[in-house]
Image (cartoon, rainbow, N blue to C red):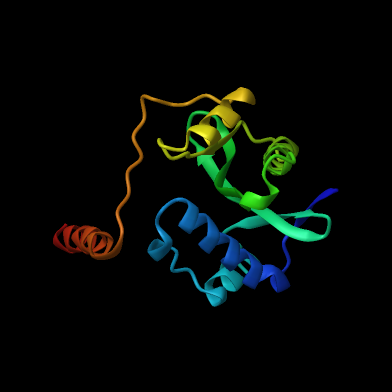
Length: 165
């Protein structure tokens, strides 16, 4: 029996554990540096940056979906699915589909125009799963990212430019 429920503050240790399991699956366990304190503040504090659903199978935590609102200048309200993960021993029970359909239902309830997410190019099982649900692979877009020192330098460059103006 699968149950999908909203995460609560008491789920923060579980969410962190699932994030680390996902990072290990994605071959980057060292990259998941989020702390329980950050998750608690950002997901359950006064200003919420994400929402999370927990999947349970026979009352055992089996996976999660973490998402947040974004805005499309072409279409308006949207949701972005940051992570969807099902523990390996629970795969094949429809849990991934249950999580994804629940996030999609939330998007529809909130009058969102779209639901976006990324999938690793090597994760063919996930790509096949998403395509089976009529999701489109956007081959003409590249994902860009600035982090760490480069992010700090970029912000400083903008501040310096404003000061000179």
